[in-house]
Length: 338
Image 1 (cartoon, rainbow, N blue to C red):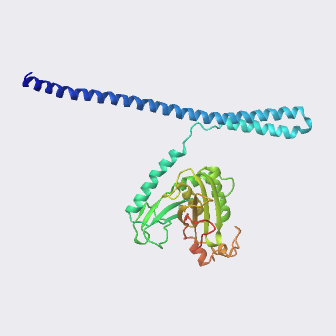
Image 2: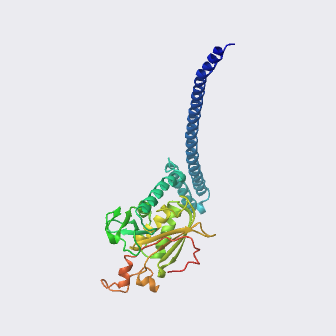
Image 3: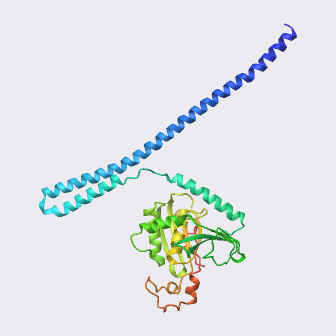
C-alpha cells in the first residue's frame, strides 16, 4: 500500500469524526430535554396531587363534623331529657362542617417557597447596609404618618432614630442611614385586622398577643415563649421551629413582626438583635426599649398614669424616642441587663 493511500485514509477519518461527535451530542441534548420535560411534568403532577390531598383532608374533617352533628341531632330526638344539649352540639357540628368544607383553601404555598423569597431580601439588605458602611444595629421606629413602623439602620452609634424622614437613604449627617419598610409591617397590619380585641399598650399583654399571633395566626413558628421585664425595658421571646429558617438574618419576618408590633403598641422605637438559643428554644429574640417611669417603678398595670396631662416627666418623654432591640443567643435566665 502506497503512502498516498495512508494519507487518504487519515483525511477520511478526520473528516468523519466531527460529524459523528456532533450527532452524538445532538442525541444527548435531545435525551436531556426529554428527561427535563418528563421531570417538569412529574413535578406538576406531584404538586397537584399534594394540593388534592390537602383539600381532601379538610373535606374529610368537614364530613366528620357533619356526621357528628347529625348523630347529635338524632340523639336529641331519641333522648328528650338531653335534647337541648344534643341539639346545640348537633348545630355546632353542622355549622362547623359547612364552614370547613366551603372555606377550604384552594391554593397552598409551601414554607420553603416563602423562605426563599425572604432569603433574597435578607441578602440584599445585608449587602446594601455593608455597602453604605452602616452599623449592625436594627432599630424599628414608629411611623408618625401611619399605624406601622419602619426599619432604621444607622451609620453611627447613639443617634436619635428619625420619625418623619422619607428614606430609604438618609443623608443628613446626624441621622445618616437606611430607613425602609420592614417585612413585619404588612404582617402586623394583617394581625391587627384579625385581632379580636384592642391592641395592648403595655409590655406584658402586648408580648403575649404578638407571640400568639406568630404561632396561632401566621404559623411562622411552632413555639413562641415571651419573657418580659418591663422595668428593665426588655422582652425576650424564645422561638422554636421557625418556618423561615435562621432568625438572625436581616429583617427576618419573625423578629421583624415582633419589633414592629412592640414599636407600634408601646409607641417607641425598638432596637433588634437575634442570636442562637439554648435547650429551651432555637432562637432568642430580645426587644429592648426605654421604659417609662411607671414601668421602671413597676406600678403601672396598663391603667392611667398618676401624672397630670401635659406634665409628663423627662424620662417618659425620652422613652418615646427610645429603641427596641432584638437580642438573641444567651439563655433567658442568664441575661444581664445593661
